[in-house]
Image (cartoon, helix red, strand yellow):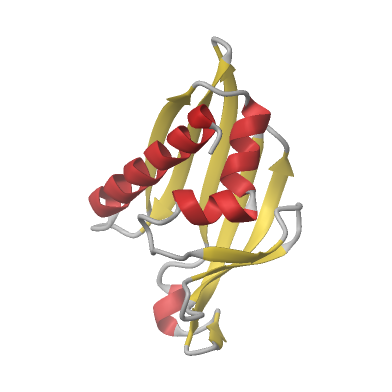
Length: 148
């Protein structure tokens, strides 16, 4: 059984600027630091593309981009994990949660952007995930509003 965490934040920047800051390789590393310092991705945000979300030690997540409509919506389907350089998309522990979806919606709002994130998770992780995403999105807001 999965549950969904939804978080919305208002950012005083255009949708295209928020999109670029959220998905750009340099700025991605900055706003995702609350999840894991040094997190990065390999791959493309284009629809149908395979993408890896990785920690500095190479462990991470295997995913694919289900939908990508700049600067409106992106949907990620998480398929498995990488541990010690080995991809796992079929073990019992991975099948217990995969696939899960992570969706980002960018809506124009009073000259700025209302960003809504919906993340599927397993029960018991909702509050932790909500807290980490809130910190991360506040960093994204700072990046967008102060153009750093």
